[in-house]
Image (cartoon, rainbow, N blue to C red; front, side, top):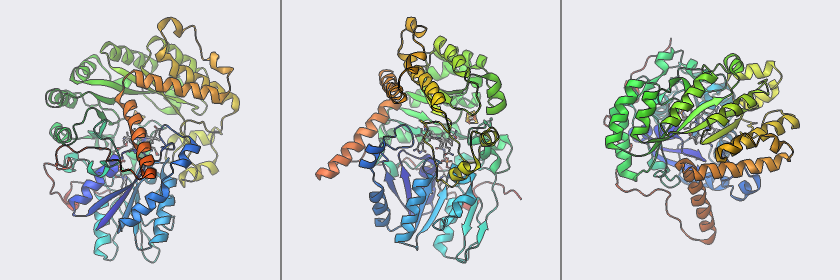
Length: 534
Ligand code: B12
Ligand code: SF4
């Protein structure tokens, strides 16, 4: 059967994995990809340029030209609206095609997504077992039976809800991520995305783990899973050969969660891979030993969530377990081991005292991360933070309903329902936090956010972008360079297309060996170890 995944903006590891699983079952997989230039739902949103490079029509034409039996979408809140529109167009052009939706947004509000007439299946939670079964059912054209983790519409309009599986426990039974489908579009060698684990021990109220962990009725112990060192290493060795990768980005929520695993992995990684890499850490898990081992194995950059420096707010509203003392200690240790820290910081959190920004400034001045990555609070479905925001008047139920339906997705560089005064206040701190890493020590106390308060918001925003780009590029983070090269590649490809010139694929394959070849690729979906919640 022919399956087309629809990708937007960046590589999506959920798609990569489901593609490998579909291929394992003998299906033909292709990808229809939107560059979403200048509206990538990630960093850049410049509407006039986004309109200029809009490739929606091409994506639709690409999907239809592949004559798929199934079109599959992996949706975040930032992308679901666009995907629903594409699904509608696909169905209008070819009503026989089945559309399947999954991903974090869909898992939070399956009832909203299945309600759209052009959506046939939604996957709630993990799709590793469900997706191959959905394909099997569509292919066999048999009478529809409920499928685990899946809601489906029957021909006569009934809704069939499958049982919610417990989380798949043995990640080694899964194939490697299928990177081959991205080769035309993503510069895989620049930054190789991967994951060793799933799950997080915490449930911060603004994070998807907050509801995802409870989806399958599992305990936290069942939720946190990790691939074996062998399985992880086999993927990296294969990818290094196939693509000549230069830098690895481990996107695990907390890469350093399991000290024993980390030590065994880093020992082999250092000897057999030896490439610089990036990973996510958590202040509570940082210690002298793991920081030293990370640095020794080639880790150059770590990303650490800080979000707010108001301890009481953080504990009571965000339910984050770390305190300022953990953060200061972690920054000390990481800097001592020359690990460059990218700190995640949130603005416009509902009812957070304004002084939280001054507390953060004091810490950032003392222990300046190489980059402070700022996020403006947005509300996505399923979060416990939404309840708080509703009760405290920062969010209306009408807005939440629109967000859940994918009709309103505020971008992450704006705030939600902010007064101009508040917006200006946050913007001035944002610009200052972007500037801090560039300032010599003597100027850190001399310049303050007040310097930006007098400027119009748009100018402060412009300065902030400039500081951010300078910090990213001068600190030689492959992440930044990778992002810049990604844009350059796609802009030249678009221009080339206008001029009738052909631009080659984004990734050069060195060895014709698909990195999704897994040591144990003959597991069928029905036999994967799992338990069904009654
Ligand atoms: C890697 C990552 C990124 C990467 C790659 C993004 C991408 N396109 O995949 C980068 C750094 C680019 C990124 C950027 C952003 N990210 Co991000 N990211 C992640 C992260 C850490 C891992 C995602 C992942 O690969 N998981 C592993 C795969 C295997 O799991 P999965 O995707 O969930 O897929 C499984 C199931 O969901 C299901 N499934 C998924 N899709 C489908 C489709 C079908 C048809 C079916 C049947 C099943 C199915 O089956 C899969 C296998 O079990 C997650 C947090 C997390 N731990 O998941 C955040 C996360 C997805 N990101 C998030 C956000 C908000 C963003 C940004 C908007 C933030 C920002 N401004 O920077 C941007 C948006 C970028 C974009 N346009 O896509 C949020 C999304 C919340 C939401 N409700 O939408 C998350 C959940 C983080 C969080 N703390 O809440 N991100
Ligand atoms: S620690 Fe990070 S990944 Fe874990 S729940 Fe909190 S925000 Fe999410």
